[in-house]
Length: 201
Image 1 (cartoon, rainbow, N blue to C red):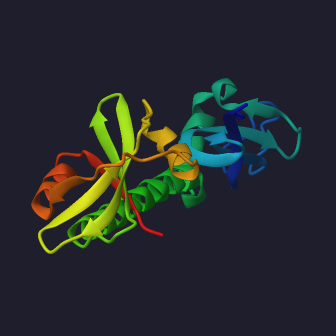
Image 2 (cartoon, rainbow, N blue to C red):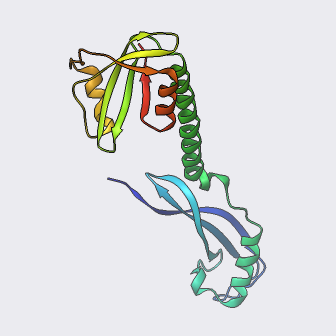
């Protein structure tokens, strides 16, 4: 269950010169500015709107923004214009941005690692292979020659790349006869998106 909603936080409190509309006292009206922000699991994500209220220190009358006469609304706008939006109201957006950047960097490192392993294969490497949009399997490199490699295809396949981890951890059999691939062919398969990963233990 995702807990989300909006909350308000007081940003400013300032005594204004306008007389109280109820008791007509001068210099007794305190103007409050509140920042409403959206949150998920109580983590602020982004600011939404600003609202306000006034309270007379003499007669204790409290007015919400929509209840204020025009003179108090002008005073509220002046106080609001001097109040900056806090940076902490953008924490959620910043976290999402960091996660996206981290994912991009991690993906780039992974792609570079896979590319390096395809260029320099070793006996024992396991290739995660996409044979079609719904067929995924493993190839085990059994021998490496200067211009080619020998691989044994796994006798089983899955219909989703997430199932490859089960094939890797299971005791499934490989074919008896190896297939030969030139190093150039492996690079072509990688760039075509048919080699998804290279597992090296």
